Length: 161
Image 1 (cartoon, helix red, strand yellow):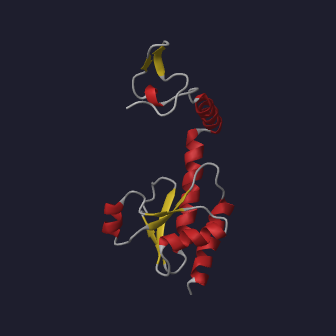
Image 2 (image 1 turned 120 degrees about the horizontal axis):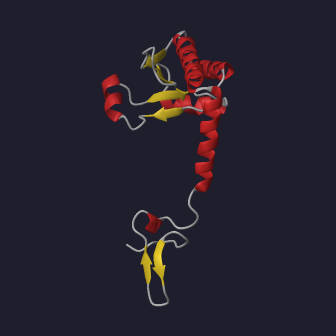
Image 3 (image 1 turned 45 degrees about the vertical axis):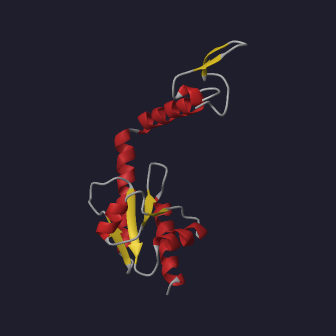
């Protein structure tokens, strides 16, 4: 299959008579290599080294545990995956609303989550749900954002009451 775009890095040799393309995947990756992301990765790694990976993980864990605690206090919210030693992800469903509706309302409240089967349909089948809402927490998130999530979930309850 011939490339549909051309540019530097995707050829082995060029003459007036013939062009020989580079081996895959370079054949389909014309132009300047993605050096910006390599530079950004270095800056991100330096940032993590400065803060400390353990401190970053502890921050993420605190936010995750806070979100699980606060959401579990709301009647009609069902948490999925509640082990204490987990990544910064809180998956949940609500008895009053489909996860896509939860996501739409949270979006209107300025809270970004994922909603759907998350490429994990066998798990959804085992859980007996069509999908889940999923909030993710990382180093850059705050307790105020956890509270914004909680306020948004309460808003979902109001809308579907």
